[in-house]
Amino acid sequence: MARTKVFNEAEVLDRAMNLFWQKGYHATSAQDLVDGLGISRSSLYDTYGDKHSLFVMALKQYRKERIDPVIQGINSAEDIEAYIRFVFEAVKEDALSESRSWGCFMVNSAVELGTVDSDVAAIANDIMKDTEDIIAKAIEKGQQQGVFTKTHSARSLSRFIFNSLNGLRVTMKFDASKKMFEDIVNVCLASLKA
Picture 1 (spheres, one colour):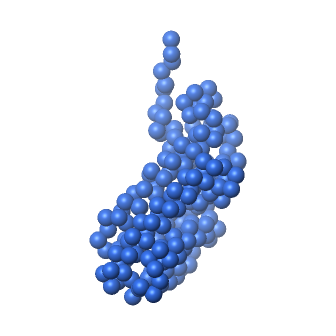
Picture 2: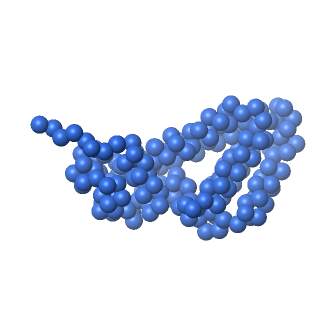
Picture 3: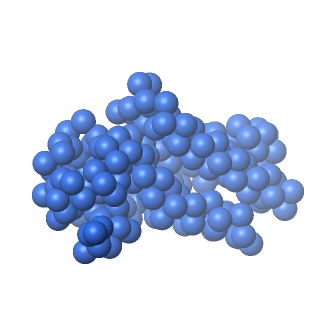
């Protein structure tokens, strides 16, 4: 007779995401997972497969919870400049939170595994492409409204903004000075202005 699971798979996946986010892939041992997730080793492997499979699921969960809502928000925003400022402010809020030294799970994962793990590279590349595309679309809308400069293409400006956001996510692991963030956000937004 099959045993029934006595844990919520979605909650355990969220705990795994936070554990991998905090420690990274290589520094998270199987025992860390068992202890941190509160399930047996057999339940871990029966439900999620191996450590790598669990990591990939956690990274996909991160995208669903943290990245996709931002992408969807940009797509439906009426005031593009205000929304781009909101995105920067959200990164700043993360940086000033208790978990600021964790950085961005996607950026951390891409840096740690992107060159050696095709699954992680594919997820990171999809996130990067989708985010860059939606920011470019928003900037193009702002250019058509006369709010943003046409000195550079929407694609070029999108790449600059996306790179700045990722730079903030890396920097926040080491220094979360409020003044530093304000300077970066203000210069980025000024670079978009017509």
